[in-house]
Each structure stands twice: as structure tokens, then as C-alpha cells.
Amino acid sequence: MISRDEALAIARQWAGAGKAGPAPEVDLYEFDLGYVAWRVLPAPPPTDGPPVPPPSTGYPRAVIDRETGEVSQWRSLPAPLVAEEYAQHRAAEGRFPPDVRYVLEKAGWYPGRNVTSAVDHWMVRFADELAGLECSPAARAALVEFGGLQLPQFGGHGEPGGGYTSFIHPTLGGVVTDKAHAFSEEYENPVYPLGNNEDGPSELVVDAQGRVFMLHWADDFFIGPDVDTALVNLIRGEELTEASDGGW
Image (cartoon, rainbow, N blue to C red; front, side, top):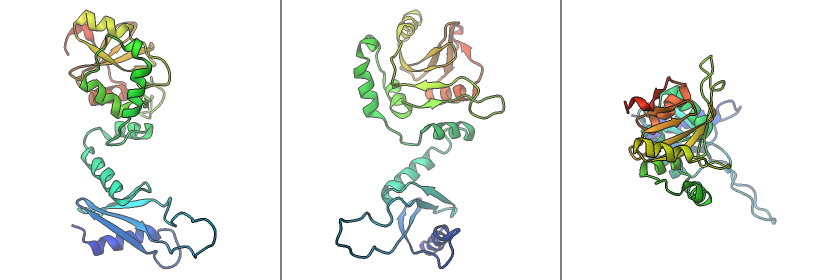
């Protein structure tokens, strides 16, 4: 376990990395998983002009893990918010494989992401198109967390790009629901639009159990038993199962 004194020493090394002269002054905010650290800069001299921002504005924060002493860099936010984001990050570490998590984070996802206002606006804007389709809690949770992300598929060398990109609603464009209505009727399994995919193009939908399907012109495919698994399969370009097989 890292003590406060040890965390201060680590923080000073972090703040002074690559800088000549004595280590800068730092301060710490302690929370259950570790310490948030930031540089403490001297206050600017008094001036007769308008007030200036605090000298620390824009400087990154660091989190020092209490168990390992590992240092990670975070956004310039108030220390309690940094601590909250770090806690969410730790809680989600095992949720996605590292390769898929890399794609998600590069696209703008982070633990605790919430775009509720965008989802609400999207539902109102496309209310006519969405009429008759029920947004289940599973569908709404997926849209609130992942809405607006563009997720490239791995290419031939295992790097993002080169495959078919998935776009998670809400989007700036319209929404197509004909296939969602047809799927709901054919399988007696109501679904709600989740996004679309460049292959086809095709529609991505989610049912009340959180199962995700791709409605392609060639066939309907089962993507995954839950949204997380579906995102892994979409990003990795895994082989899909035809929905008509009924294995879902």
C-alpha cells in the first residue's frame, strides 16, 4: 500500500519529469483507490487589470494507485471528479478486451459516459419514424452509454480500420425503421434501433433482453446476447450467426 508520503514523492517525480531544476510543488487529494496529484504553481503577481485564470488551469492531473503506485494521467478537472472517473475506470477494466477497449476509448467512450440529452433530442426529432417501436431499458441504456460513437472494425493487420464501421445512434442523419418493424413481426420479438453498419448498409437493433441483431439485405444476423458482446463482435469482425437459426 502506498502511503501519503510515498505518493508525494511519486507525484513530485511525475510533475518534474523532463524539467530542469528542483521538483515542482505538488498537492494531493486522497481517496479510497489512491491519490489525485497536481502541480502547485505560484500565484501570479497582483494586477490592476481583469482577473486571470488560476495558474493551474489546463494542467493535467495524475492518479497514483494506492495498491501499486502506478501513475496515470487524467484531464484537468477538480480532484473529486478525477477520483470518480478513476473509480469508474477501475470498475470497468475487465469489461472489454484490451484491443476492443482501445477502439472504444479512441472513439470517445469512457466508463460512466452518459449522453442522455442527445438521446432524448434524437427520440423527439425522429418520433414519427420511431412510432410503434418500444425503447426498452436495455435499448435506452445502450444508447445513453454508446450513442454517437463511430466504431471501426479491425483491418487485415489487426488494427482498427479497413473493415465495416458501425455507427451507434443518435446520429445527425435520419433513422430507418422498416426492417426493425418487419423483424419484430416475423420473430415476435420487439426490437429498437441501436445504429447501423456500413456492410450493406445494415441496421443494428436491440431487443428487450439486450440481444443485438444486424438486419442486412442478405439476411438477419445475431450479433451477441448483450450489447457488450455485440460491440466486441462488431469491432473484431467476428463471424455472425443467421437469426433464422434461432440459437439466440
